[in-house]
Length: 110
Length: 112
Image 1 (cartoon, rainbow over the protein chains, first blue to last red):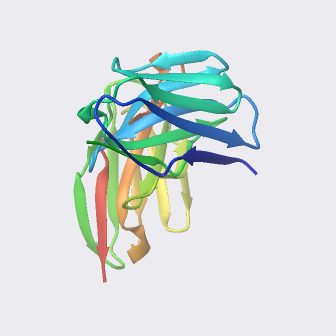
Image 2 (image 1 turned 90 degrees about the vertical axis):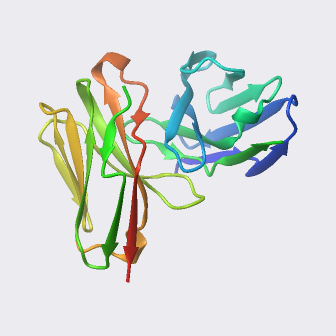
């Protein structure tokens, strides 16, 4: 069966520090992978999506970046975090149809 | 480009029905529906791919009107477990079919 792993679950980081969130998918090949961010009490904002290794599409210009070094691995990074980067980060995959989301990372930038 | 959901919030008593609407200003390829419990990730409910398509399981169903560029989610005889925030996600024909844009969500609270 297909599963998606996302870690860490929670993270508290100081302003200006780097960030690396990792997402891996099991049980499927060549999935479309996505990073979404959700501010408290708000909707889901698409940050990046990838249809294959090394292929990244950015939706929102900001100080975040994404990489897909392997077929089932998707990484969200930042060199220097801002206060506004706080939120609930969700990785998701789809092969056909709807999305399956990871359990999310709650990031607080202090 | 973000689909518009209505209502923003709804409070129901157990056993009552609710309808949540999702409208887009662009031609839609498909519509997804998700439910998110507080502090958790959204969970996929269903996807509608064709205009006129209707789907459902248990007492939750949805319809997709391609001409009107809208979808509706129907919750019948609501249960306490239906509480949460419901999101529609739309894939527009112009977006290449790879990305879903989500509405702002509809908060549903079911009380005993």
